[in-house]
Length: 190
Picture (cartoon, rainbow, N blue to C red):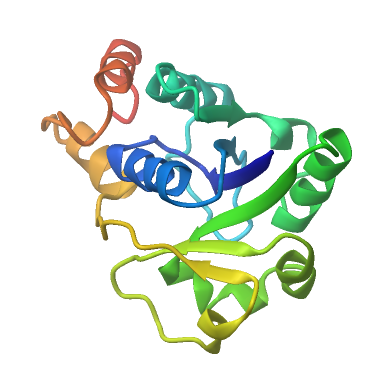
């Protein structure tokens, strides 16, 4: 099976993530999208990062009714910070019957050469890139293993959602209803 890997802290998962994943699963050759919940992004230091199991729970609640989606905790047992290449290798070893592609936003493409073993990721896995506001131009768009995917350009951010919660503003429609209920019940981000 051809699997698209959507990495993120998902702090929290929101409708922007789900729309992009759905476009990837329904308009490309990707047969399933796995949401890889990252315990710690090596490029981000986030004081408001919820525990990894809470974020995994939110992802599972968000994708419960979609058999094209799956949540992955593969990085929970790996050294931190997690590097994408190490996770890709671990997944390939664990699931040799699948081929994996990395899904990233266009805003990350210009910085992609700074990633650990970026050349190996391109060579052995490849990138599926969705549009993001304020993406810097890069020659990587011409790479044979980079596929640009036409998807809605949504500027929903987890940072904005957390700020809304902190200020007791509604997050309705920004996150799935089950995620909103879970966040409110657990009093996250307040």
